[in-house]
Length: 146
Image (cartoon, rainbow, N blue to C red; front, side, top):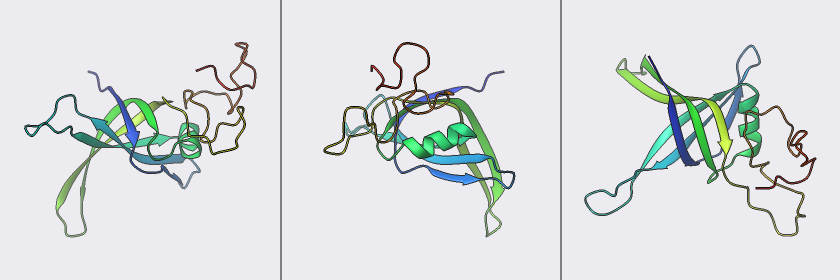
C-alpha cells in the first residue's frame, strides 16, 4: 500500500508554530494549489490544502516561510474523524509533510545587501544546515547559487 502526496503551491497565510506538551514543534499552514484545467466559465480554480509539519522542519518553516511563498510538499494524506461541539460527526483531511522545499526566495527589503536573505534560504527545509551554510560543496556561507 502507498500513501504519498506531492504538491506545489503558495502559502495562503503565515505558518502557525506550536509545541506539544513534550516540546515537539508542530507547524500548520495552508497552501493553494492551482487546478490544471479551467472550470466551465473558463476560470482557473485552486484547492486549499492544510499542511502539518513536525519537528525541526516545523521550526524552519515557521522561521522562513510567509504568505505567498512557493513550496513543494512531499508527504502523506491523513484523514481524521471527530465530533464537533454540537455532536455532529466530522471528517478532516490534511497532508502531513515529510519534506518541505522552498521553491522561491523571499523578497528583499530595499537597502538589504546581497548576502542577506530575509525569509531564509531557498533550500530544503529538512536539511541539517543552518541558514547561510550550504555545507562543504564550495558555496561556503554565501548566498545559494540558485
